[in-house]
Length: 90
Picture (spheres, one colour):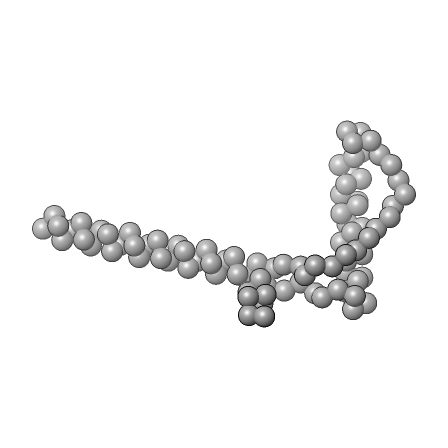
């Protein structure tokens, strides 16, 4: 009886591990990735590393870089983002 219960428990643990691995692979493969694309943004402003508005400046720089990236996609200079699994099939 105990051996049968232990054998069933092993199959149950194995099944749960396989389902978890499949779910993780599915999640990872459907994540959006950006193809390599160089976008250069010059702002011409200097702010010290630990100044009070450095976090605001960093956020503004990220928004400017994102906007430039979207413009490059619209102009055809960069490929649009796609699911990771598209890279796996060629």
